[in-house]
Structure formats: structure tokens, C-alpha cells
Image (cartoon, rainbow, N blue to C red; front, side):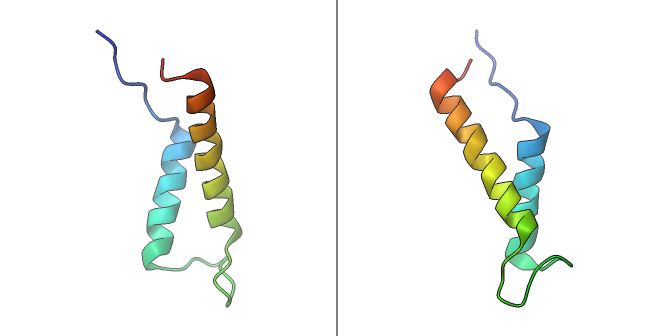
Length: 58
């Protein structure tokens, strides 16, 4: 039987960052709504998804 692969810790933290920013702002958020932490989190999630599609879910 195959086990589900665990999500890397950094990707899990990225999801938490996005969840936090849906409800509140952090000290890095600008007045226009841009936040470098959110952009970094989105980049990590996109990279992980791309990695899974290329190498498959092993």
C-alpha cells in the first residue's frame, strides 16, 4: 500500500502565511496590499506543485 507523501514544512508554512494574510496584515504589508512574505509563500507553493507534476507523487 502506498502512503501519501507529506507536504514539506516550508510549503506548510507558506499555506499558513496565506491563511493569515486573508484575515489580517503583517508589518511587512504595504498600503497597496503588496506583501513580500505573501509573494514568497506563493512562489514556494507554485514550485512545490510544479515539482510534484514533473516527478510525480511517489
